[in-house]
Image (cartoon, rainbow, N blue to C red):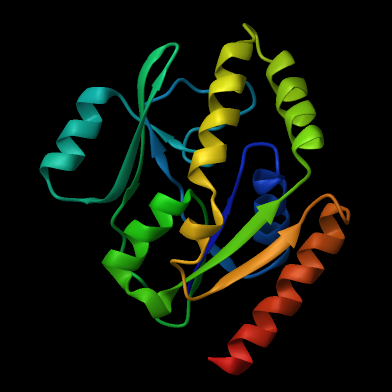
Length: 194
């Protein structure tokens, strides 16, 4: 099973992902991007950072499950998922977007993908994003605004309803440890019904 953590910027995706990877037996899927590395990000752990030329080589080889391109204030950044062989009896955990999860469904099948959708009050979410950006070497608040507005289009109820398996978690209602317990309880229920 591939469990995709999705949600708008600032909902706690990275924090919940780290918590679940550290405490559970998930195999991480590391996404790829052509965007610059942020402070504290580690190549091969946070993302696989590649150049535009490397991206095109991987794409030409037919190894891309899905890709998303964003026209940022710094130019076009590409995020993508590279094909990987699914191992039997292995659960995978991945932070992605709704479009990224759709690509996984197309490649690996509807029954193999479950969304873990994180949501949070918009005011708190925006404050988190601004706070995170302020810690960067060269903060870019225009990019925060672009991501915020893009999230409004990307995470609609209509798009979420396209998936058969969606677990919804309000990350403002509990601390991260409690959110992890909520998700794991939901996953156990989901496995019993599968």
